[in-house]
Amino acid sequence: MNISQKSKNKYSDSSTLIELLICLAILSSTLYPLVYMLQLSRPKHPSSQNEYLATLLAHHATEALVAKRALSPEFLPEIVSNSPVVVHKNSANRPHTLFDSLMPDGAQMNETNDPEVFWAFKPFNFSIDTYIADNNFYKVICQVNYTSNNLKSRIYFDKLISLNQSTSPANGGDSDD
Amino acid sequence: MTKKGAIKLESLLPITAALIIAVALFGCFRFYTLKLNPVSDVLDINSKYTDILLEMRTDTLLTAKAIVGENNVTLINANKENIASYAITDGKLIKTDYSKKSERILIDKLKTGAFWTNANLPNLLTVRLLPADPAEIPFFTSFALRGYKHE
Image (cartoon, rainbow over all chains, first blue to last red; front, side, top):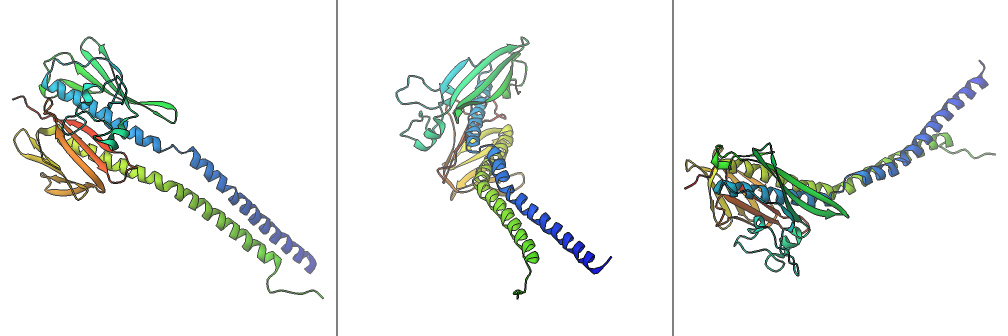
């Protein structure tokens, strides 16, 4: 191998390295739109705030049922469909009795006595579905419905109530489902 | 006569390519972190609320009576022993655990907060916390006092 051939090979090797680096540079530039697409595909968190508040409200309703049944074990909730959580202005629909104690003084919450919490609760509606399972259990489904980004969503807690009163009175013979 | 410089073109190309790679990667990193910040704030408040929910749920399982003060509540079991107390002081919700003899800040930056039981449902403790930041959701839920005994 003569000197001219050696220098030709050396030039060819360095060209390959430069081409590789240029390719890497182009590829890394394409990472930016890729990250942008990944970011877009992430779940939207503003809706998770509504989801979290709906969970807290459904928890409140379920716990209120447990408390009511502990005081009067014969109490069984009835079916409720789309009742508001707070009193809406110019609306005939009243909130369900489980949402009576939203204020420390026991008053109904409205947009004048507690505006911050009122506007946070306004998007939510409350429903109860019930059915008897296996003749011994009364199933209660507390649902909190809301609309987020034009999508109807709901959070629900199930409660299985034993119709046999022989179980512990402390929790009304209920079990979480 | 050709002019000869200190750096050859072949040596400039890899430096340029390396710089482009570095700038692109830095851009991706900045884009990713800038978008993530508001999300982490939401997750932060949600995780604090979850912590409060779990702590209070555990305590109210054993609670027979809740003594409600202006900005605090003390949970007492059926043997009339203190389980825990929750107090709102200087915008902070502080839990005092009597069994562990410890105090812990569960959440700070609160505007107001309240605890109450209903006259019709003395075995239901309701908690309402309003954060100082109006963009954040309020905490509102209730806990049945499962250690409640009929008088």
